[in-house]
Image (cartoon, one colour):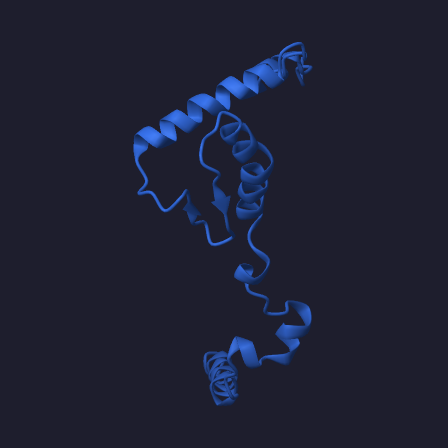
Length: 127
């Protein structure tokens, strides 16, 4: 008798679960109130927004200062420069110009501490 009672309760529980109608997550109104279905593509991800901001504010101004062709960036991560095919050499040239311009802009400014220097300057916990 002791063995039959848990067996009957577990079977009743399983039968109750299997007879309930299944609802897809998009049709579940309770889930939609807690976590509405908004696609990441509609808002753009944090990394994509950060990349777009860096391209617009830092990379493009510093690479076009030396007469290079302007580069337009869009949110679908395609970068087109005067319809020329992409070559690694053109990227290397732009990278060199970017760093030269970045060094000129940072002349006279205090050097930013690297991550390792920042960590070394932090107090040690537990000593």
